[in-house]
Image (cartoon, rainbow, N blue to C red; front, side):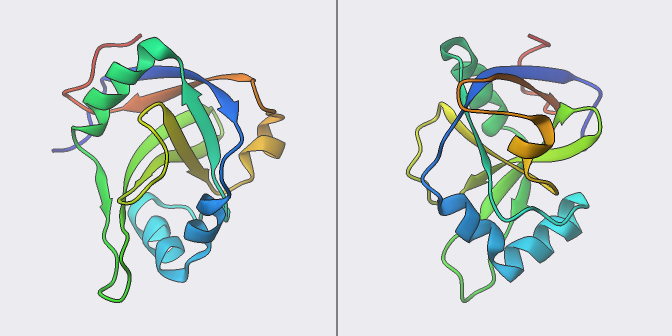
Length: 142
């Protein structure tokens, strides 16, 4: 299903992670696949965003809908799904949902071509809003 003009917003706060995103995003096959599938070479790390409580159900509807599949090569055990987002007007980003994760449903990992914390001046507990375009099963603009 192609992406549409429907937009959904998700609100949350920046939080520190476990450091596993940096390892996953540094894998050559992941970097190549992200570049091929969504058009940018990802920075080797993720920005973690803990969703506001009322956003979790909205995210679940999005997550259960259309995504871009990051299929692993046969030698790798873990793939992922990608959901392009807008975090700032001039920064391409995506939520990455690994097939295997230790995080709950309220925590999102964002990838981008740049280090998002420094590029956007973000620190733990800063509020952020993500705009996702195109999931027809998603809730309307929040």
